Image (cartoon, rainbow, N blue to C red; front, side, top):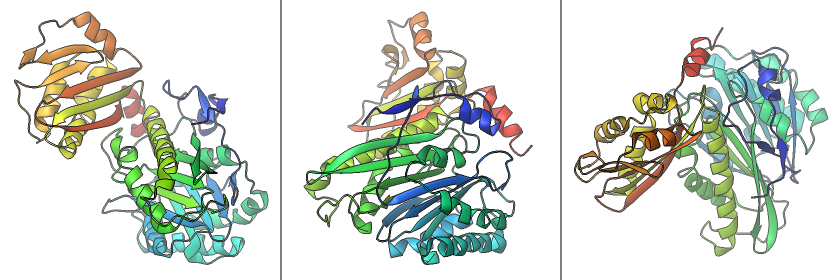
Length: 426
């Protein structure tokens, strides 16, 4: 992936009045290039926050295709329901995203608010309301002040520009401490295509499809059906393999847009060999964004990579990995630099998947800490502690029962998580 990045600074955190930028933040932010067929803008609507941007508008050229994956929550937000209803058309002309209010669990008023925003955006951009996609993030259960959003759409269209990716990413932040951006260049049939992506997410992260919000745009010429298959497959090892706090958001939305301006020859199947490089690069962008979300976990001080191998199958391996990743005991032990491998044993045992105590092996980094039903003979407490004291911690489990494997990412659990969520609405 290209490494053209701008230096990361505490600017975004200061702008939102939140905590300092996460110690796990990228050293540099990706500098996303203009992408033909889309312009963006961000502005202040005062949805909930003051003196900061909280609405972004993206306008797409006619013919833009779209695919999406959404939360499986039974209490999904009104914007999620709106997008799911529009998706069968497969075309998009605009995207409106607000922060500060999730427009979730807001009843008929929430649906009306979503519709009002879509109609207003359609009027401003000259398209049908069913070609307007939207997302909202923030407090659940409070009516959306849709009139504040619709009031700024005209100004946003007037200042929309191809170089507004960073501003768009900042406008959709809530408790995030930095904007999340990623990019890649790929080839389809020898023709270069660009992929740009932004995301937001910090807490309420245990995606059952994607992350809280993420939007990826490519100039590739691809039909909606192909985009959908690529996206549905791409979230499995990326957004669906991360967790911060085990809570699935009501607003999880990941949309993939293709403007078609790259001029590559049409591709009708997701399995076409011509898409091999594009799929690889798209997957890389999705994983990059997903890991940035984990690195910005609320109160996080460490990134934890959990690898499970030797399970009965891949699904079993992932369930075990998530059991470890979501364990408050494992996460707090890592936060406290405590090489307490017994907590990993506990998490494996409670997963419900097949495990044999006497076959199980556990590593912290390169240090084997447990095997054959007990502490490893060569266990070294100092070395194990050193491994869990790093900013990036690796935990590996071998069940030694089969060929199933999985990898998931999480962060530690610190008092900072309580500080943020104990005063979220204050």
